Image 1 (cartoon, chains in turn red, blue):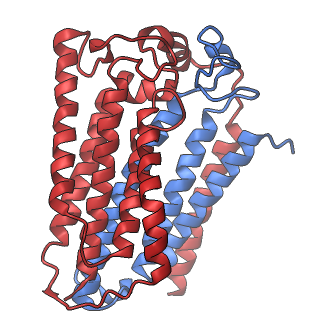
Image 2 (cartoon, helix red, strand yellow; image 1 turned 180 degrees about the vertical axis):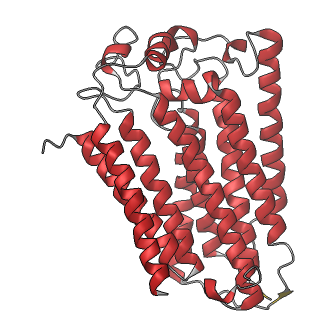
Amino acid sequence: MKIKNSLVILLVMAFGVFLFQVYKQHQTQGSLNKTAAYYNTNTPDEVGASNVVTAIVVTYRGLDTLGEVTVLFLTAMIVGYILRHGGKEKPMKNNTSEILITAANVLIPGSIILGVYVFINGHLTPGGGFQGGAIIGTAITLMILADPLGSVKKAVLHITESLSGFTYILIGLAGLLFAGGFLDNRILPLGNLGNLLSAGAIPLIYSLIGLKVGTELSSIIASINETGNKTA
Amino acid sequence: MNLTIDKIALLLGMSLMLIGLWGGFTQKNLLKIILSFSIFDTGLNILIVALGYLPGRTAPIIDGSAVTPENLALVAIDPVPQALVLTAIVIGFGTTALLLAYALKLNQHKKSLDINQFTDLKW
């Protein structure tokens, strides 16, 4: 055990020395590099989004985001699969505290509206589909905490998730037909920079991503909760 | 030593990575190992965001007054690391969820979260 511990200390120290070299050689840049300068110069004209990060995530690197959403979808599927044979159902009392139930009833509608606001305004303000989806996931988690024995219908979550994923791909294919390429946002008019209905298909795509991420997070939490209600 | 804000963020990210690495190797409880992984992940994300920092600049979001379409390239920081970290956070979440689900399953089989109890692949 002693040898193992000293090996760990050696490894951590070696990694620390490596990181310190990175730190020593790091120089604060004075100006943007070529890629960043391109994105910062051309985003207002080419994509029409106020938030450059959103423009990169949804349009310039849209294929990566599709892959990312797919990874999240796979995670939700695998978690559901691993936890499926969870043993026998144990009759459990619903002993959630009154304070949690009351607080959840107050907070859940507000959280969901905040999540929707964050993903609809993803092209104008900080935030977007993933952040808004995470907020919605929090609301559903609160719902499950307040009522662990039911009320969250997994079928509804799965249908919402599949429909938004499917529509996302259809919009991408529409970009291939009517605009410059897969996931091109110019299938809809770009509009005026800074308006809610601007930046072409970005608000639509980010809303779909928000719904998809929110339902995926919720179904992961719901699977884990269902297993927690059972005994092996 | 002259510590600017990006240097502080770099040091913070690197310290978190070291803490996460140390925890992942020394902890015996599966949940603590997963937590260490999560800490390492957070440190790495802070490090990447710190690399995109430019002194005196602001977020790459056009607000009409401080940042306009014309001066975006002169006053805004590098947006690429932020987009990358957005992806990395989501993937980190997915990995953590998978690890937790697997730990839950292991706990159901052996009634234990101690990593030393799982000797099936040891020789």
